[in-house]
Amino acid sequence: MADTESGLQVCIDIKNRLSDTSGFFFTDILLLITGFYIALFIFTTQFNTFFVMQISTNQILDNTQIQNIVRRIAYQIYEINVNEEKVILAGIEENGFLLAEKIKAQLEKIAPIQAELCAVKINKKKPLEPVVTSLEVNSYKGQSLVLIDDVLNSGTTLIYGVKHFLDVPLKRFKTAVLVNRNHKKYPVKADFKGISLSTSLKENITVIFEKDNDRAVLD
Image (cartoon, rainbow, N blue to C red; front, side, top):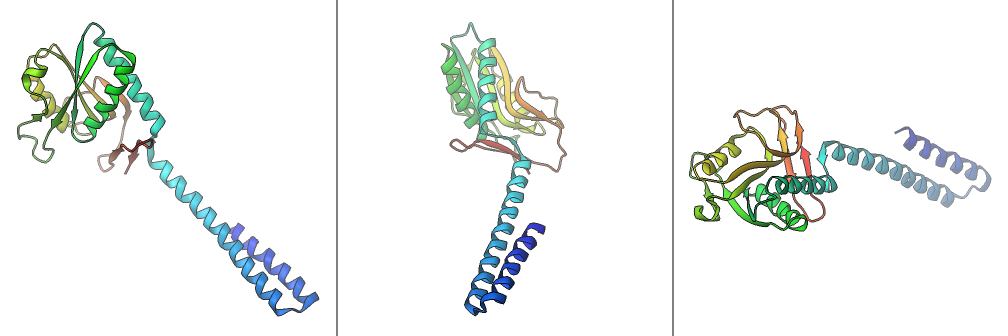
């Protein structure tokens, strides 16, 4: 605000000097308009800078960081499945499945292992309803499977997903999340995680997957 006032004052001083020497009314009006727009420009610039700072403060992961996490999780999955020919990446809809797709793409770049996607549908409002998977049970029976979600909040969604796959004889079962929050209601953990955050129950973490602009924000 001080910069705005100083910018306007400079223009007024120039106007007064020119008015004393020239006396042209048109010059006075022109300089006043110019001063107004200069002051408006300074104010707008300061406001935009403040607004951008507020947005960046709430962002906890940017596109590059998420890419690095996805790559690291892919390496971790390959490390424990190095002797396997196939691994099932079961992503909880919606964002968990999108994350699984990204991990699959990275895994295929670094390992000679077949990664098969499986969409997992869980009614988050009614988690007691049966879990539905895009693959038949026989497709992942006896296989190595990783259950994937974007954010581990209270643990409700993940634990019901875990329960479903525990009823199926699997060769190996692991879980992976992008963001792990440290206030779970259920004794469930992520074997592979991007970051762990201690947040309040009132705060919410949202993961947004967009082309070249993946990010996680704290609401």
